[in-house]
Length: 256
Figure (cartoon, rainbow, N blue to C red):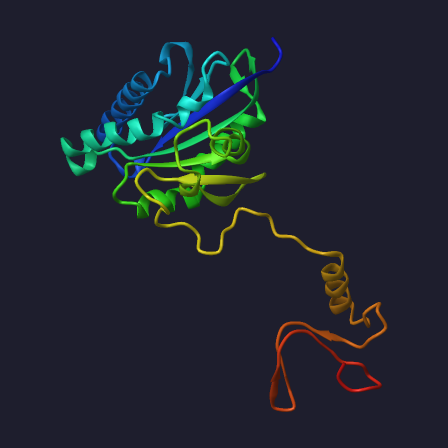
């Protein structure tokens, strides 16, 4: 087996695939392949030079290092959205295809059964994230919802290697199985797509040492290490009034 090599990865998945009959599933699978291949051809992404891993209702495309990874975002995403829209106009509702798209890059390795690597796992987790499903479902004017890993976003979007407006990418946190990573969501035609989590900023929660000590004190009933009495965080009612901020109550000397 040869060693790992660095690849860009593009994955697509059909919305609401499992809700359709097997006859319709066969038709929309064909549409997925036809539309992705057409958009790839129009974008300068050489399909025949890529490795396409079939996953039934999805495709994971391993892009060779010789291909500029920028094309996976610009112009591929906009072209794919346009191709799918054209198909939808000519299709019945049951045969229409909308796609979730995930883009990432990393080291992967071949073995006797195919390809493996954390980069593939992360791409699949992003593609399957419920937040991306919600965004596509809510963004009814588009036929594509894109999620991009943070490293790809920082290297390609922030550095200006694509023509897409960086302000149309919004940070999210993907927590799927063993995966916890920051990513960015973009929907063609939306400055801010519908369906994004209202309280999501893409950053992991942080806990300071003081927060941890206070939590430990609360759990054990011990007094805080700073010598004061119990600490009441946030807002508290004291003597019928409202005191804002943090209040420290010492056992020997009133409010401080």
